[in-house]
Amino acid sequence: MAFTGSATVKLVSDSVVRITGLSLAGAASGTISLAEATGADVECPAAFKPRTYVSSGGVAVALQDAVEVLVLVGGLGVTTQVPIAVVKTGTTLAGFLITLTNTTAATASAALEIYIRFH
Image 1 (cartoon, rainbow, N blue to C red):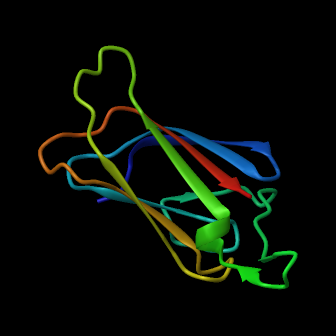
Image 2 (image 1 turned 45 degrees about the horizontal axis):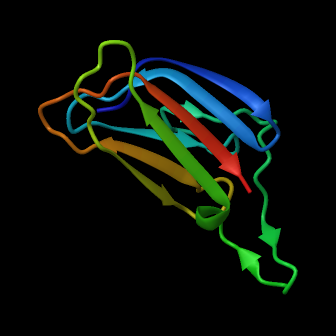
């Protein structure tokens, strides 16, 4: 089962994307991909530019380390917060996938505000 609602994807800068309008049913998972991939529930815009980063020491930094995912859960009248797990998989732009999972089986999440940032 995927996200519920309708995603509003906004490019804040070439390194930050904000996604709103979604929630997760109990025990449901939703996926977010970069623009180079297909098949995810939500796709980041092509102007979002995470790329292979090489540190000053010449070491390549993996996308899982360079991409930060912040999930804010809440809204007016929300009295119960449910935990949302974040898992990042894949090592290439086409294979990178963010999976958000509502780890509470019986309770749907409130509205989600998701920020994806490339450092």
